[in-house]
Image 1 (cartoon, rainbow over the protein chains, first blue to last red):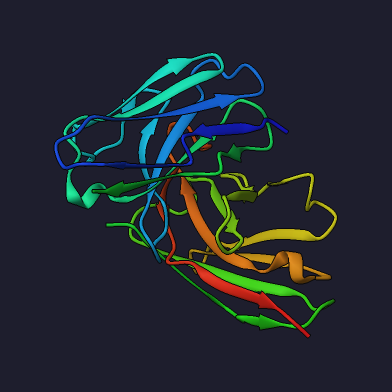
Image 2 (tube, rainbow over the protein chains, first blue to last red):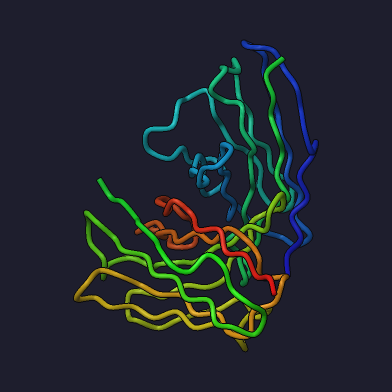
Length: 107
Length: 119
């Protein structure tokens, strides 16, 4: 299976800060990668797919980049409601696999 | 607006069969892929399997020998069965829809069902 490694495992930042989360894959993915946001007790929410395509209704402060094995999720101007765990997911090599998650906290 | 509502037994004994059903409200049912994904407490997400537009199912090889996903298009529902459960199967189970264009990304999710396996 493709191993997805996220870093950092947690990050604490202030409102208005720029936050960057990285996801590294053990195999080549082209741009077959998604990012999800999950709040406590809730199901994940799709933010980004195909590495950089913003899902409908997601604020533009979220963006994704990367290809191959290295990918980034960026939150420009962090908001209080962005406190959550973020997961990456690869969709290039069966079975689809997820990263272990990155927890974003507000200082 | 699409909504997924899921239900099933939340407490099982080892060796029993897990059975969860997900009902889809709003939007097309037959035109999409439907998935089951689980999350052990405090851990990451694991894709279990899918049923596609044609009614064919695909499963994570790690679970393939124990899992079955079926659908009832007359009720807009799909069902997960996982047999011979152990404590390692304790998790929150989610149903989810695949994107219409690229069905391997998941855009609508059920509320989740905590399934605990304990003797």
